[in-house]
Image (tube, rainbow, N blue to C red; front, side):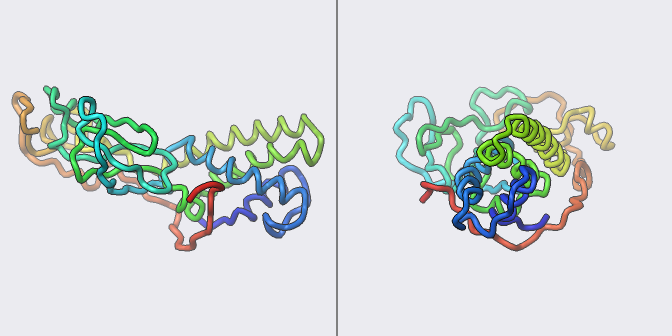
Length: 257
């Protein structure tokens, strides 16, 4: 990974148009004006379209008064800079009350977002895994940047070149590269099954069914559970071939506080 500034990304877009490069988004030029409008919108659309691993954070949520106690046990304020919620992080004690099997008990925790409030049955303290749009620009992958640049290029091309065929071609390229970026991001993520590991996978690991947790879920009856621990420390992890970087970028979404 390397850091890309908004100006650099927009110049990649202008190269694809093609059009003259800019020195900043604030310069007095038509291309800079177009990029200044399209960059934040295109960036947020890309970010919200996929659970990009490099933009993920886990934030503990602050409890707020629950105005829907008949539907949900708890209410929380949404984290700042939320781009895309992924899952509510709870513990085994937060398993659904009607769970009758270990598999059901370990399902993702249900939640609902209304306005700036998240409702769930997970008791405090509860955290939300989500994408953070403030940190994302500094850590975005090269594939994401290329797809973003092509998306911006497809939107500024027609005003600059007056060519509908060029606009269509750039839009097609942007869609292809966005799918490639998603696939590359998925391939970089460790392949895990959370705390629950299917029996066929346990056998491949040299273990036995029921041993993944080394125990049972309180209140859940599971016949013939074997408590022999299974070593999962070296399974389903892949080398990250891209070095992380420390440089951060200043990025502000218009209208965001």
